Image 1: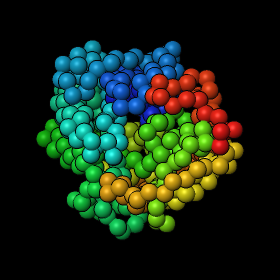
Image 2: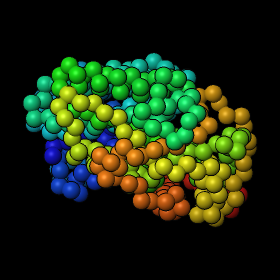
Image 3: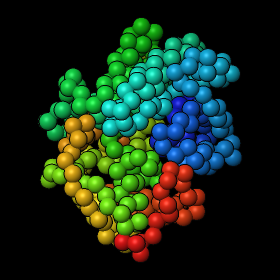
Image 4: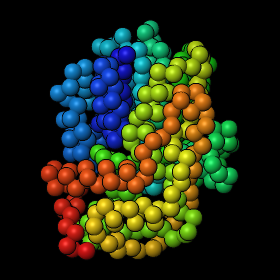
Length: 337
């Protein structure tokens, strides 16, 4: 396969690129390197990919037609697209909704407009989100559930991406699969995510915010399971003109308080917890059914939360000590707690 990978410097994108390269595929990475979170972390991820045979990287803006058309003109023999680039963050979508229109909606349309002219293209896999289930209360979430009650503007843009994919599949015969990710976590993760913020706060002896409520839970899915799911979907191509959506989650919702306890254990520090009211943009719980994904591809998650947290902490301690960071948080010190 020759894969055009958007969001290659991102958390999931980096790991997908690593896996594809190990399997001997070519990867054309594309990323804007925006500053929503640490640009240095994104560059550090790319530094791991740059020496590997078969990897090419170009910086560009997915919402700019000229940027996308230029890279795909240079690599017009792309056979597969993995579209992971997006403006991330549920709560930030309240602060700057226009950024989500540009990156998540315009960027998706620009990509599909260019993709429909690629004669060798076989399949597009793109990132959706569990956020599309919004205010649904029936658990677990299934792909057949109605998704017309979004709880955030981020969710609106992700659902718009699914509808856009359906239209382009119908109009131009593009084979497409949207993956609704459920709380990916692990090494090289995003510093804006709760588990990363918790790890920093616990290690530095600083208070961490835990939203009140016994029902606060997430379907945490370890990055290796996310990546194996992306690739399982990628090689399992639907019929021409079909656009489908699949859940990609562990089917094992866990109380966020239990995540904190696991981090305390692995870090050897006690958390200083401040309870606050959950914001309206954050749903109380997520829970994925992966029956459809398993039936189509044979994929199943295999990494437990306990093992995943252990692996994350091992990386986190080495990275924070060895690389530092550029977002104003000093190196952690357990003795402070």
